[in-house]
Length: 148
Image 1: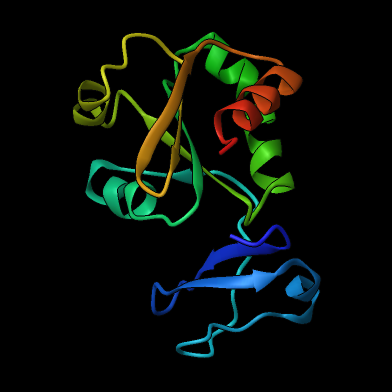
Image 2 (image 1 turned 180 degrees about the vertical axis):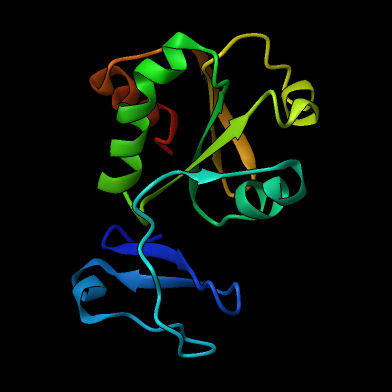
């Protein structure tokens, strides 16, 4: 992907659109159906039914957080994860999986503690890490994991 492009999925037709960063303020439209494209500003809650579509079929980098509502460390890092989703919208897709609601996904990825993070690119798992990290450490881990 070009360094000055972001990926946005059309909410109407599901097409993934590549949009130049300098065009984001121009109300970008879907190349297929011409609907307005929304820029994601928070993590996407993912279920087992849509995990493969949202994560494995995504043509870019995805940060997946496995979390639990009762987990103190998850609550502590939530603002950091939300901030990354907002700041890196279109460059880094951020999704969250509630392990209590989606035990099959927790089992599929051998999640034994929360929060647990995975990085995928083009459907391939690149890295995983467990624990509540500072924003700087989380960003450094993402950057080091996605270097070609």
